[in-house]
Structure formats: C-alpha cells, structure tokens
Image (tube, rainbow over all chains, first blue to last red; front, side, top):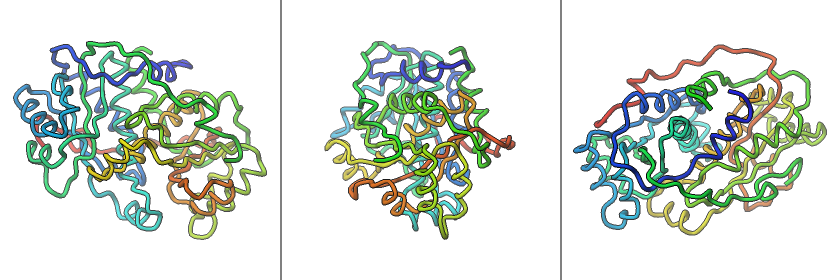
Length: 182
Length: 182
C-alpha cells in the first residue's frame, strides 16, 4: 500500500443506509472476516465472534427480531445483502483483571478495532456498511440461538450501496488533537 | 487502493515494543491523526481527544507518571518517538441515551475505531505502534493537565521499530465467525 492509500480509504467510507437488492458474495464477506481476524486485541484475547447472516430467510428473521418497535430506525439494514452480529466473549484473565483494576472495558475497544477492520475491508471492495448500535440485542440473540453467556454488542449491515451520501462533518484537527499538553 | 491492500496492511502490523531512539516527524503524526479524525462514531459524536506527546521532556514526564510501579510492564513505551493518550469525552445525548438503554458503552467502541485508524496509518508509513491499556490513568492525566471530566482510556506508543516480531496466533476462521447461525 502506497501512502496515502489508507487515508483515502478512510476518507471514502460512508455509512450506507440504502442498499441495492443484491446478495454479497461469500468470498467478499470472507475477505472482510479475514481482515477482522487479524485485528489486534488486549492480551490477544480476541474476545468476540462474528455471526454473518446472508441467507434471505435467516436475515429476515433476524431483522424482524432486531429492528422492531423502538428499534425501527435501524430497519433500513434489512435491505442489505448481509447483517453481522458481533458478540463479545469473556477474554483471558489478564484482560479481565485489567478491567477490574483500570475499569476500562477493553472488550468494547477490541470490538471497535476488529469490526472496523471488517468495515474497511468492505469499503476496499466497494461494499457499503453501517454500524448499528440501536437494536434489540436480546431478540437478536434469540433469533440466532446465541448462548446466553454471549452478548450481542453491535451489528453491521453490509451490501451494495444505493446511495452516495456526502461526507459527515468531523471535528477540526484542533478539536481532535493537541501536542504535548491537553 | 487495490485489493488486497488493506488485508496486507492489517496482516503486516505488529505490536512493537522495541524502538530506535529516533523522533517521529510531525507530518507523519499528523497523517495518523487525520486518519483518526475521519473515523466513524456512534451518532458522529467523536467522543475522544488525542494528546500526542513527542517532546522529550514532556514524554519522559508522562512515561514516568504512567508507567511507574505496577504499571512498569509498559515502560518500554517510553523509548518510542511519541506517546499518545486518548481521552474519552461525553458524547451527544442520543448516544448517551442509547448507552443507558442498551448498556453498551459506545464511547469505547468509538475509541477502538479511531485509535485503530491511527495505528493503521502509522503502519502504512513504516512506523511501529503498541496499544497500551495498562497504565496509571490518573497520574497520566495529571502529567498532561487533562481536565478531571475527561478520562484517559488507552495509550499508544508510536515510533521507529527496532524489532520484527513474528505474527501472533489468531483464532481460526471457524472460531471467529459463523454463517447464519451461532
């Protein structure tokens, strides 16, 4: 990768909420998963599992469970070629201990890292994605027979974009960062 | 970016714990920050600030505060050209409301996403990084005059690698992911 390829990739990516009614090839989803698989995590615990739902019936069942009632704002995601549920798992003891002492939940940081790898690998292939935080986690878990010990933390939609939204405004560099002092 | 450039970038990246005693040019750090600035976040809240410490005296003061006593395992980071402290800020009400209802702390997911953008942009430039979760957050905050309302969640070291560690083992694809059911 030649600079500034990564910056271009990050800059081009948008949250996509309108999808063409097309499937996403398994090889493309596997590529995204491989990128997620390589993600770093605290103590290399990899405290997550990705459940990819691309069969129309299973996807419809999941979408109905996850995006009903007050969760309807995310129901656009049902039209994407695939939905992904990311569940968190208990990591190694050392990470757990760190959590107790430092009170930071590294599992959520790790999920952010791994799922963003998925998202960026999708973008590279021309696929659109949206992070979905507002969904019925319990109902989604039931729809997929996810064990009770595992917690669906976030979902992603992934599919062929049917919109080209403008870039969202970001903080200025001065708001985002400072050098050598707060 | 031509496939599979992103996968190659993710695959090449290692946690670097030995650094050459060289500074990191500001333009390179700015490139990493720009990549972080473009990161998506829940409700576009961007609930974080990056404090980059690259002046030798400030870096030494921060390292002494952050990596003393039980936090000594991360003291290798003091040798890196720069240290980054990522603090979380309270996001928009909608994200906050989502947290209360869904009990997921999206701020930590968002920090994972944005800081991994920084890390990947560093990798693209040949720089080494390490995620640092085990540090004295209070002392680090005091060393940088970070307001009490803000919380240092994670740190990164970034510098010129003086080691080439082998890849860490990751879960198999079967352990990481499944299709259409748990």
